Length: 338
Image (cartoon, rainbow, N blue to C red):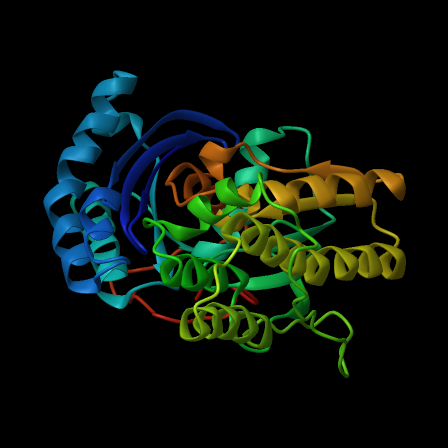
């Protein structure tokens, strides 16, 4: 089954063609990073306009790169939630147009389900059930993937997402957008014991997390140093901050492994590219005799291939949509696609 997949939830316009949920025939991406870097972050209105400018050409490019024509496609899939509402609408309306004009089935895909499915591309042998740590700019959660379309959230952040905190601290340190990647690179030459930063403590649900206190502590440290004329050890602060985030995430995954007995662990989302988290997760899972699945860096960020991968399983589960499909800025990963 050849699926034309569309992703436009934030600042990457992407169109891919994916076969049977596992084989990526092409994945075309138009990045807006250089444009938004001027503003230090994503400007929603600009992102939406750039998606409109790029999406048709990307679809043509995807067909050209595979040597396919429209009749070779079997369905069209699209990210319908969550994301910047204007940006998501561009992709949804484009996909609806393709479905209406060709008669192909329209498959709505939740963006976070897509991130989890990036592991199916990287690891063809991976099948549910497994645990997945989802870490991105807008989401942080531990998910029990019971089946390809049946999931349970074991724990989630109670406030800020880990990725948002990385980006905020990086921005205050005058690092270029995207800040999380710049902070990670700087941290690799720093002493992670240089600064003492808080770790969130388990509450009623031991799998839940909190990052707002950590973010505030780091920002207060930076501002205080500026006020009294102290020099901040930036590599040390970045390393200490990265360690604090990882120390919040990894032990909870370990708890989930021990509680559920699951030995297959996946990591997904843009922050899955963070070197400290990848290192600590590798060590923790190996210590418990588990198998860790982490997508390559190229599949950690937003892309359409992951949407096409998840779409295949949504289609098999009967999760298709008609022309009433709408876009949503927020929506739970649980339940059916709609």
